[in-house]
Image (cartoon, rainbow, N blue to C red; front, side, top):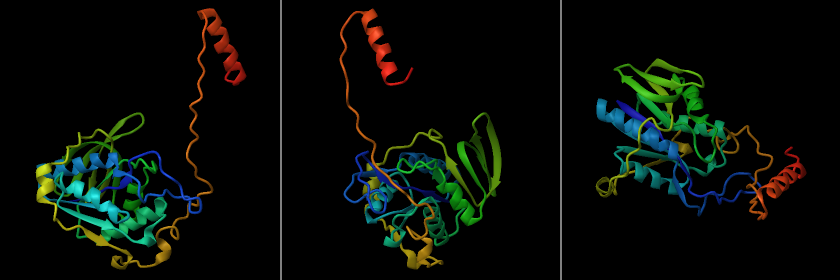
Length: 262
């Protein structure tokens, strides 16, 4: 089985500056890590490979330094890695990101299953996976909490719905997005890190895509326009009150009234 896992490099800190003109995060020079939700997608792919055989390829979009998370994936047992990197991809919203990734998938060899994490910690939209599937015209299932059975031409999974758990079977090729906790992610192996330190990472740009129209990528291909984005204000104001219980209760009640909470 050929498995494709989508991963993303996200800021490893909450102290990230915002470009005042484009409204996007300034990622250059910021400590980064693999999106935590993608670790569950990786582990799901590795478990399926261990039980059913096959290969795992990871796909990510980002600047050249995003190679680091592909190297991390190699040290966990992944076979191949592809980085989509081009300045024309910069500033993409959810729709443009999904389209770029789908074009990247089409540039890769045939696959049976695409696995994505539920969402990313820098965007939190949980929309990229399903939108990719729509662009690829393949069936998809979100909120997968359990892999029930992998068959030759289909996969059976449990979906975590708001009030129920549904079991569905979809034909391959297909895409699933997995919930946090579907499996416990393994730690990177130092032995595998040494063994794969020279393993090739393929880097592909817009020129490698079938659709080379720049207006479909990055800021040009993003229908979402950000009016204003700003970091939250830090409020560390505090007061220390002294008195007996009756005095403190009255003080607390008076404060709540002033703040118009009551």
